[in-house]
Structures are given as structure tokens and as C-alpha cells.
Image (cartoon, rainbow, N blue to C red; front, side, top):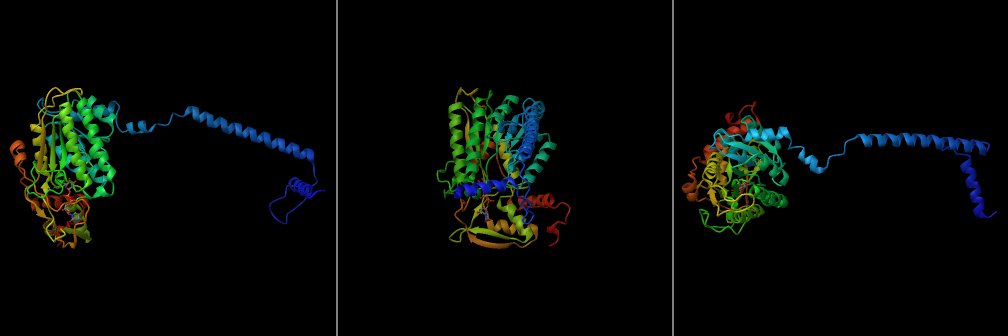
Length: 442
Ligand SMILES: O=C(O)[C@H]1O[C@H](OP(=O)(O)OP(=O)(O)OC[C@H]2O[C@@H](n3ccc(=O)[nH]c3=O)[C@H](O)[C@@H]2O)[C@H](O)[C@@H](O)[C@@H]1O
């Protein structure tokens, strides 16, 4: 026997004797070829039977179960349908024939929430739109939504990039105006998530303008630009005539791009468009990513705050503008907006195109902002002063508001101390309604 055959035979014997896996329990049995064949067949047919039952079950459930929803279908679940349309139509109802019907994008945001409430309270029809993203505390956005809902404003959950949704909204309601406040805000966050700025502030804006120019009638559009478009401009106060071609951050660049895009839609399609350059808006229900807001939070927690100064030791200052003044500016812009001249994508004549600064005309140093907060909170801040990093911030903003005053009747009336006092009251009430007010325990 060759070595190969010897190995094959011994291997066969081992297989046939079915060795148990436990060592020391080896019980060689007599070899019975017929029995083994029968057992093998029996096992095989049992296996076939169970496999068939199993397959039949799978087939049965596959046929009975509904097709799994596509991503588009998933997206649609949050809007559309008879009930949804009824809510949109009801929210769009205005109190008088002369009132407006306004689509407010970013309605669950800081400025959007305040503007929507003011419009609704004076009798206009308002439909909100917001994607409730996670840029900051969603609970705050949901709380704003509750306030709006109580006032009769329905906030549609959806993104300005969802073309089908925007077109559906324009189908269901003939909006006279769009107040476009949805945006990716924040100057410094643009270094962490640049694409979100292009997505919301450029692509989303174009999507909204596309639907607006196709609408019949076309709405007039008022939208939020930013003081940041002045970028490295050093001539103060900033006037709308000053250069805006040196943005210091991607955020500013996307807002500047928005102004250029708005002009092209006005020129080609006859859309009436007004851009508002907001200057560091603050107040109750504000944005937690802004310095006055997180300074308050950190001062109360005893956490260190970082206060920026210029490289030469100079002051870093902002033209902080109170929310109620901004709301008046927004309503003034809506009230003076002329109708768009086009319809269904065709221009019929030149349309209004405007740009305004909405600031306070009274810049305050960030160190002074901290001093006011310390006084209001009755807590000393743990400050770390450091040179402003190259993160897109500019050293100084100061608005010239002559044009807004002349044409919109805009005149801010709230100084920083009064506005911050209102903010602090709201903050303490919102975040610790049942606990003792820390401001009274100094
Ligand atoms: O006016 C505008 O266009 C912009 O106003 C704000 O931007 P910003 O003025 O930078 O507001 P904050 O982020 O609240 O900063 C306020 C001041 O505090 C300073 N700061 C910020 C953060 C910090 O940790 N320390 C600090 O000293 C900043 O340099 C700035 O001077 C908003 O965040 C933007 O969305 C808006 O468009």
C-alpha cells in the first residue's frame, strides 16, 4: 500500500466510526453500511422538509408585507396629505383683505419666531417653515414652536432645499410675501462645518427663489443678510454704499453670495427683493451659540469665559441690536415692499431691489457687555482675555441706519443694558423657572 492509500483508508475509518469530540470516550462501533445509509437519507429528507417550511414562511411574509418606504416617501411623511393642507390653509388665514399672507422660513429660529408672532398678532396670515436642525438646542426651537402654535401659527417641518415641499406650499397658499430667515448662522462655526453654509445660505436660498419666481402671483421677498458682509471694511459707520467684497468668514461670503443671487433673480424674473443686514441681534428666546447667551450660561455656572481683544490691545465691539427693534425693521420692510412684477417665471417689468442696515448705531465693547451681564446676574465673571483668533470675526461693527430710517421708518429704541435685562429675565425663567433667581441672591 502506498503511503497515500494508507492515509486514505485510515481517514475513512476514522470518519465511519464517528469519533465523539470528547477525548477518552472513544467507543469503536461495528461498521454497518446499510443502517448508516438509511439514517443519512432520513436526516436529509427531514432537513429538506424543514427548509421548505422555512422558505414558505419567508415567501408568505414577503408577499403580505407592504413595500418598504423609499427615502423620498420617508421624507414626505412629515408633510403632505389632507390634514396637513388644512393646517397650512388655516394658518395662512388673514384677518382682513388688506392683510398679508406670509411664508416665514426659519420660523422656529430666534428672529423667525418673533417676526411670525408679530405678524400674526396684527392680523396677517402666517405659515412657518423650519427644519429643526441640531445646530443648537432643539428643545429651545420646540418651545418656540409651541408659542407659535398657541398663537395660531403652524410651523411646517421641512427644509428650504426640499423643492417639492416648497412648490407644494406655493400650490396650497398664494403667499403675498416671503420672509426668508432660515439660514446657517454663526461666524465661527463655518470653520467646522463649511458645507452647511453653502447648503442653507446658497443652495437653499436658490431653491426658494426658484419656487418664488415660478409662483403665480410671485410673492415679494424680504430676507436676512448680515452685517458680516462688510468684512474687512474699516470705514465706519458701515453704509450700504460701502464695499462688501472682502468677507472675513465663509458665513459672510455665503451671505454676500445671497445678495448677488437675489439681484440676479430680481433682474431676470422681476422678483421684488429686500435684503436686511442684521447687526448682532440679541434678546429673549435668542440663539445659544451667540456670545451674550453662552456668557450668561457660563457666568452663572462659574465657568471661565473668553473675551476677545484686538491684536494691538484695541477694543472688539459690536453694534448689538435688540430683537424688538429688528422685528420693527422686518415689518417695515414687508410693509413697504412693492409687488413682484413677474408671474409664472416671466418678468413683466423692473422690480424693486433694496438693501438695508438694521443696527443700533451704538457699538458696545465686548468687555462692556460682560460688565453689564455681571451686574444683571450679580455674579463676577471668570474672564480670560485673549487676542481674537483668526476665526472669521471682525473687530468692530457699526451701522449707519439713515436709509432704513428714511425708507422703512426704522428707529431702534433699546439700549444694550435694557435689552440684556429683558434677556436675563427670560433666561432665568426659561431655564430655571422653579429655582430661586440667582440674581436676587447676590
Ligand atoms: O451681525 C452679524 O452679521 C452676525 O452677528 C452675530 O455674529 P457676532 O457679531 O460675531 O456675534 P457673537 O458670536 O455673539 O459675538 C459677539 C462678540 O463677542 C466676541 N466673542 C465671541 C465669542 C467668545 O468666546 N468671546 C468673544 O469675545 C466676538 O468676537 C464678537 O465681537 C451672529 O452670530 C451672526 O449670525 C450674525 O449674522
